Image (cartoon, rainbow, N blue to C red; front, side):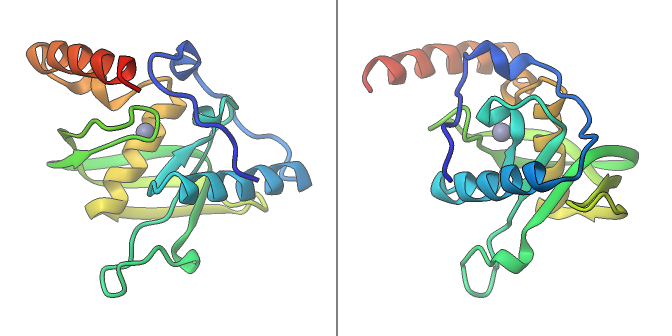
Length: 171
Ligand SMILES: [Zn+2]
């Protein structure tokens, strides 16, 4: 089921999410809904708080470079993630389903080591870089109650606020 995505400045987006304890049927159906909502919104990542559920859950499904499609076999379901190591810096033009229509260059770690659980509670540790590493950091910020626009410089943030408000009014 496609759920409603909450958007900036909805204050629920600043909420810190809590760890998942039960890896049950309810979690599985939430993960399925998150996948459908992300695909319907044409996003490559979604955190549970973006559908107003404050749990440490995120999904990422990058676009396959060869086919230009989001193949479901590339879907990653991430529960209770923790970054245990990070290295280097990289920048990428990011967007967010909760800040529609806005894109900006954001600086992130170039590579990260992340430990998380899958939908059955099995622990997984991965080293991630490239777009996958960037997407993971972006989505984990959501779980901590942060948005990528907080990383903008003062001038860019001002410009964003002005343009975003104008765009919301014209909707
Ligand atoms: Zn986002």
